[in-house]
Length: 207
Image (cartoon, rainbow, N blue to C red; front, side):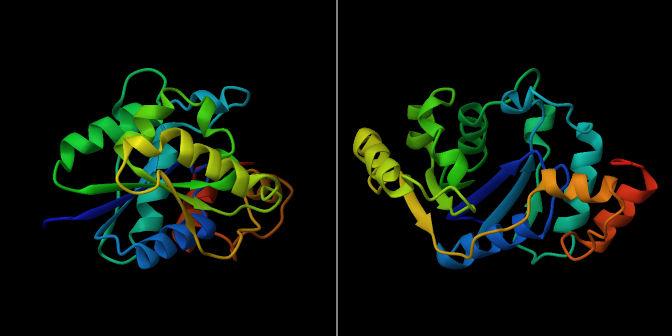
């Protein structure tokens, strides 16, 4: 199937939760995406300060969550298959090779956008894809000014603005919080797909 507009939502997904799903589907609706790719990170350099659950488990959970989403959603193991540390710039280059005729959209939270200028090869990121910025609780401080600054700095790389806002409700849950809740014996079923929860229990991921 030809895909004119392809969105990618990456993340550690440790675990993937309903907030990830909602942001992805909101982006697909607002920006008319033909395909939405959920991509668990392989060896994320920005998470080097903590132990990340094994890639095989995070990939399995992502596949289980995506299975209940609309057919235009899929899961990719691209970053997991990449050797060494994974960088968004390299991922988008690979996707451009897989979707040469498509327009790429990279979905990111506001907390990421605030620091994106310090990421590995940010000019390559903004040249390769339009960044869709989703609000996160507590990350509004200076966000509009930073988006304006980045759009001015990298605006010559694209026909459209490098960063566009994603108009969706703020997500009040995080994977970090869910791991803490599960470890404390709290119920996380309202926040994750039931099959993901069963997988977490069966594999004792966050005990």
